Length: 176
Image (cartoon, rainbow, N blue to C red; front, side, top):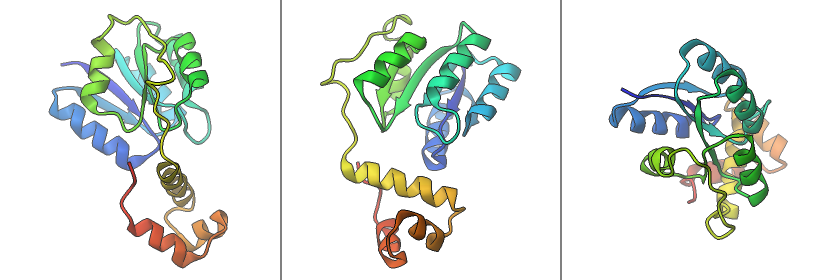
């Protein structure tokens, strides 16, 4: 059974990805920030990792660098909702074997680990699809809401919008 570390600050996405890897026979460890991920890497030494690029606190790029410094044989796929050629190039230079835009299917992630035998390939600008404006807005709202511990009034104040407007946005499903 292959062991994999999944790192994402978006709890819903992390839980969904975790369940999907377990269904495919993987032994999983999850983390929602840099410190949790480094603890898992030092303690369990997983051979595979999926790391979110943007996280509160220390970024996924710093985690990528430090994880490979601690465990050089670790194969890492970087996931992001904020794809760009610059971050893809930086991730590959730091040692990621692949760079995928969210929402990536678990089968795509598994394919990225085995597709090229671990040799990284920088994606062209056409292959990296930036998220829609609606998706970026949704993710930003979710992050602010998480920072406010689910308090809608606090989140609305931080976002500079009326509480009812925020509630209406929260009732909608996440855009693709």
